[in-house]
View 1 (cartoon, rainbow, N blue to C red):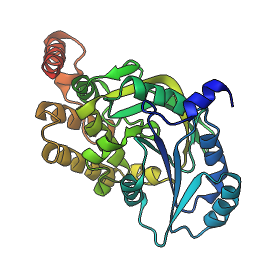
View 2 (cartoon, helix red, strand yellow):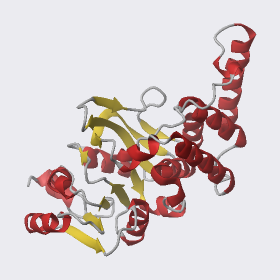
View 3 (cartoon, helix red, strand yellow):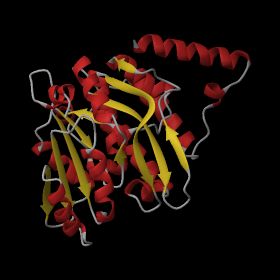
View 4 (tube, rainbow, N blue to C red):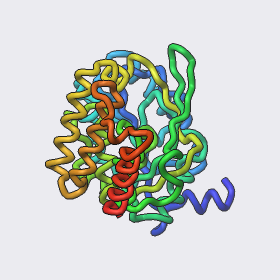
Length: 312
């Protein structure tokens, strides 16, 4: 270890602690790849916890073997399957880190993620969440694509008001870089963690709440996490069921209107709802908002200007 690496590794008043939480249910075959990616980071995590959610495959045997190689990994065995949202909410009450990354066992942080993230955490300690781009690899087709926020936001710290305006007016309604989110632990606890009823959309609502309260840091458009995409993943199963998906979106809107009324203006939520149903193909985008010429376009541009002005 070099002197610089030693200085980075040792604890101190200006060095935030980072926890990495990995929930698992019957995905033992991915353990070695995931843990290797976490442990080989240039800036090591201060706490690595694997929660096994009542697996019935050989996950525990694989974990025991890997712990002999990496004793810094802590394993929590849950007797019965509770579901991933319940597991991460439990972990949120038990971790000791100032920041936390909830990492799916079949995903991998790319080299340098934690180094970059913790540098930004020191520079912008007021932030609620750090987030960046990710690259996907589809298990069945082999297709790859990169998801970023570059089209609607720039790298660096984004204030709460600017973040809320951007999320509701510039970003796609279904936007989420949740695989990359590194949360300030106390902020995630402050907004109530993850809402189980929202299923795979729970981290997106939590992201909106955390960034609306404290802002966030966008790490830029270079991917920081590699994500496995498959039809059998937790989110993949829900997104194929459009009626169920639309119910989740309606519930998300209701929760943002009631539980987090102080964070999200009603005019923002109405715009977001119109975009949601347009993006999933249930309703057309309102004509006056998708006009391409004439007076309708002028009204549309004026509406964009006015809401942006009011949002600042």
